Amino acid sequence: MKFHMFRQLSRIALARSALACACATTYAVLAEPPPAPPPASGQPSSGQPSSGWIDPINAPAETLTLASRSLLLDVAHSGERYVAVGARGDVLLSDDGRVWRQSAVPTRATFTAVATIDAHIWVVGHDGVIAHSADGGGHWEMQRQDPWKAPVAGDTATPDPHQGAPLLDVLFLDIHRGYSVGAYSLALKTADGGATWQPLTVAKAQANADAGDDLGTAGKNAAKNDHGDNMTFSKDELKLGQEATPHFNAIARTGSGALLIVGE
Image (cartoon, rainbow, N blue to C red):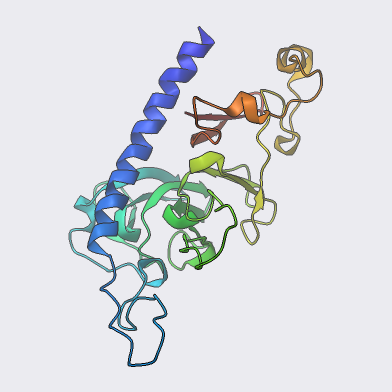
């Protein structure tokens, strides 16, 4: 019964991530840089876009009159206002849920999720972007970005699947402790309000020490498995067919204080 419930939750979350990925695919085509001009005689090509092209991740979102009609992927309540996020770095604010105005953010990366604690707002999205506002969306700072970079010629190192991976959900327990999850089993945590983000080891159903709550005897017994007290997923347990890094689509906190991640 629980297995089927989790499958349904995963399908709902996966549908949201599919919308985000579809939007990203379209945007990537539109934002593809023009080809670099041929190098001057005797000069090697750098392989980089022409100097007139601006990477959307480092360009501020454009203020558009029809922004409220663009693709939106999440909404939350912050203090006395609502916050919605979506394609092209769109962040919309509303005091009543009927009239929306666009907030100026320093990136055009697609935002997939938003979390709030009072007037603090965190938005996450493609290229591993995390942006934060401490005043209800009035001003923004970039806390994290990890865009994909083309491998250097001759580099035989295995590419990191997390580089450039989109973040698909974000959760904050208070203004200091937060979590974000995304594609290729990417999971992050912060203990300083997002100033720094650290990789998170995903564990099987158990009380999360950072959540500050105890599941009690029943919860602890339910968390036990064939590995005894070792609750970390092995590579074999995470593997789905040929996929060793399933996407994490959403993260939530249960009434007992445990953290739950759903995905592929």
